Image (cartoon, rainbow, N blue to C red):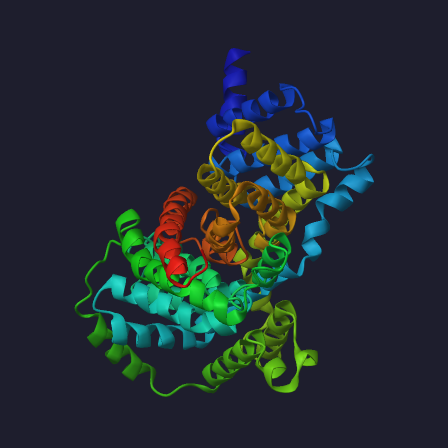
Length: 501
């Protein structure tokens, strides 16, 4: 009997797609959370939802199973436990709500469009051009990607479209030119470093311009409401306030990542000559490359709302609509075909796991968990009797690091920011309120650094496979702290010079 049990266990362990040790730890986390008393202010179902969410995050961190499988498990557990509804029919409807989100489909379509860059060879051509200009050192290529982000940011309201749809395909092409490919196990050559730079430039540039990411106008509105219209940021005033600390972050970020995740190839003395030789072999652009380039140009113009600037607001198009237009153009022109769409596994994998995480975050908000958390934070600060400076710091850090609970910056800002700003106005002396407001505005973008599901750009870059999850979270935390310090110190002095406090 014992031999049969051992044989059965070995078979089970070899075929089931999970790691036993991490699975036992994750199960213990779930059981422990469910056995804890329900916190005052939450319903038992809301606490059950918290337990499912936190357990899912722990399972993803520990890599119990592939992230897509963990997402499906979260959907199944939520549906069976019925923590969001009184029936399994209602629960599964809740569990699948996020899959009709335009944000998720923007991410999926951006990944599908990027396939055309590889298929046509245009991506390789662009990558070789970058190498020919900046390819003497890997860090130089990193700065090239960061500058590309910075130039596009004022005109691209979708940070997902900018970082994931435009810059990331260029980054992948550069990495492939150095034979740095996750499929070959060679991502560490240059790809891991460049992917991290590609991503971390995105939150910085999102903080620098009002039009660089979709939630920024909401931030402006909340700041105006919380200050009774005494501080109303315009496009120009936002850009001026964020200019100096943002540029310093752009300058430092590639160097910090170079230390945290150093590329295996540091100096590339022959890269420039190699790039010129390969470009010569490629010859003139092919018709499909021209179609791809033209489609990219059209996407950039539409994502930047150029038609609306020229002809009026009736010509504004949602970024997801624009992405689908680009995908359709590539298919009907034969630049990519339907088999390319079906075979892009990373896009469909992202659809499943990112959709599940967005769903969990939205349900936490609907069940009142986020409101409960915000109120508890306010009450704790008031009861502690700490000074206003410490209170302001706690509010900023609590707001930023609570983004671990969110898969959308818009959802996070909508759920929590106005409450935090209002608490700050009541606790901080009036002359220092603008300083706090500007830090919160910066933090609303800086928090994107933290996780691989923090914003729409992150699952695209993470899904390409260049950065292990542990590295992503470690670098994300460090960069978040570094950028918060830069905006606090340099930004604070800059805002003092500008007369905001």
